[in-house]
Length: 213
Image 1 (spheres, rainbow, N blue to C red):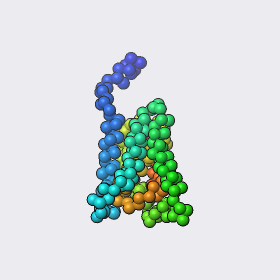
Image 2 (tube, helix red, strand yellow):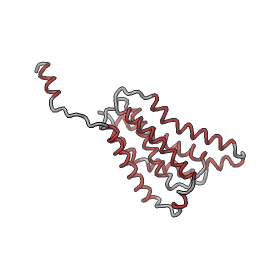
Image 3 (spheres, rainbow, N blue to C red):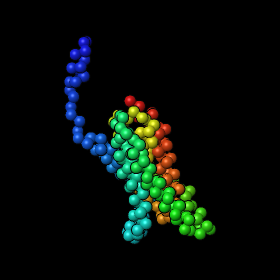
Image 4 (tube, one colour):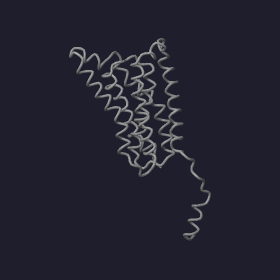
């Protein structure tokens, strides 16, 4: 086979790529992950009886805004991680910005709180189970997003896994926030962030095995 025949064979049967194919693929994985996490939440914890009253409080929406901000930024990051050679610095910065803002807000709250009450704000009443709960609810999104990323062309597998884990952790936290009763910003900045960081680390560890071409 000469070079011309090889080029003709490689070029045959090529179909145009669907416009916005990458965002659509990741959005479908996002919906599947959130649906899986919601079903898991209902199966394990049930539905809060005071949900109608809870959604009328400002802190409930402030708490939801934290994982939502990470999800928006991490989706952009995942799109770039799925394309070889895409710049990542600005995307990583945008994904880390909500976490930094949460840490600053928690620091301000703790400084304004008398010393004797600060530990109570950090520990809350569910610190022993909150991180594990978020990580458990992050498993369906992690599987869905990892499967979607494998259909793209990631070349930096560890970074791609970390980005997928960051996104999955934020999805798990979003669903967990519908049930959790903790309303203290210092609690969120420690145990919620810890769950997201661990999930990102898990994604980075398993990515070389799950995303290998």
